[in-house]
Image (cartoon, rainbow, N blue to C red; front, side, top):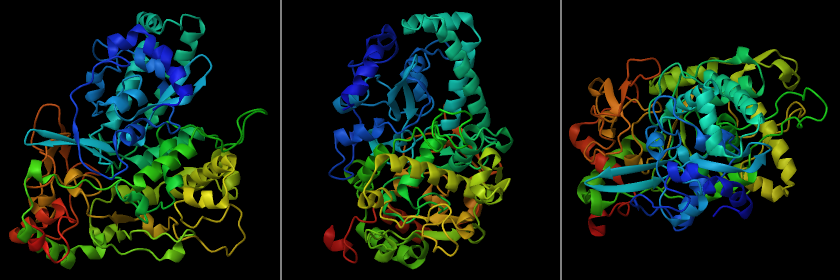
Length: 578
């Protein structure tokens, strides 16, 4: 449930006529409930709702403005459920969601607690926007927490900005918006909204991708670098169109993995999550304040305590188990054969799902051990190189932040990103006055990096973004893959069946955005249908080559059976377990 302070801030919005006309109402009817799967004892209705709507410091738009904004391309309000569903957002259901989400918005939106004078509380996005999905097959539908969403993030952002620009440039639209807001009939509203429209246009121009990503993908690191090096630093010469979209990763086991991103360059969870907030509408002061009295350098909107709480919740999130009653029983003999093939061919890179290899406890100040994820050089795995090349080759101008880089005018983009996130993190944690033990917990038990200006020879910490890791790709755990397609880091292979077969047999064109599972090939139904996105593997960044380890038909079918649920049977004794 939202804290009382936040509920008081949003109460006027719920009372406004726009909500009744727009959504289901603050406590109105709910769409039919979707079934859930067991994903950990603590992941009940309240935990799910908290994850879906917890504020993190993302400042997208004043909440009241979002609720009152009209679409640019058709009649109706932008926040209407049917409109947001076009981009892949999921409707929230249940009493806990209604309490945590008084505006009745889809999963992944959050009202930020701090109101700004004249604008009220702001709206932002949460982790759940990109990491919650629903799957369906045989007439049954399940919500999967932590699964890659079917959100088309880029198209949503461009449509939102189009709505903002259409309103700012049309006095009639502005007047209708003012009427919906009721309290915004002062002369200052038009000035504030026009200024916001200018900022919005600049933001979304910088983040406009060179290639349409489609549902379930975004060039996250490219957009984070743009947010930091262009928007927050105020240096337009650093702008580069995001051009290497990757699939949203799944979240189960992520707090226990040594590395998380597709390029294994971030281990510290609070730094990783803070970087995500800064890339998705968070604000930070990266250059020295232009005038006395400004916000301190490295201050930000990031809500570090909330990010830490979310990470603790995710430590208890389990992979979804294949629902045999709904989707069909797993054949134990075929499963056993698949397990043997995986042990023979796959666990060297992907680790063993049932008994994973772990890091040494001395690599953690808390003695924790983490799942070893393979870091395979891109040249060896042979998949599309756009993502790793974008990270390895991009540089940024340091501009007013040159003092942080020994006066260098230009530095590698990865170094810039890591330095800025670290300094924002240090500033934020200093404000929390954490004990050493609590700070170690925020860092997930990882060893912390030496502070800026540490004397030469200071030993590097083990979770460092080395050059070798920048041009590598992570071979992650094999749990819950049936709910995570398409496959490879860039989502260029529609099904696991195709991924495990000859590269020449992979489709060069398929459609994404469906939530209907392909129960035979493991992935989502990917044939052409209205409303789906055409994925063309011949376009830059979309190549479907690499991971060339084709299996004979019989072994491939066995591995697919095993990957439905690698934990289904006790190791070595599936027949007895059945």
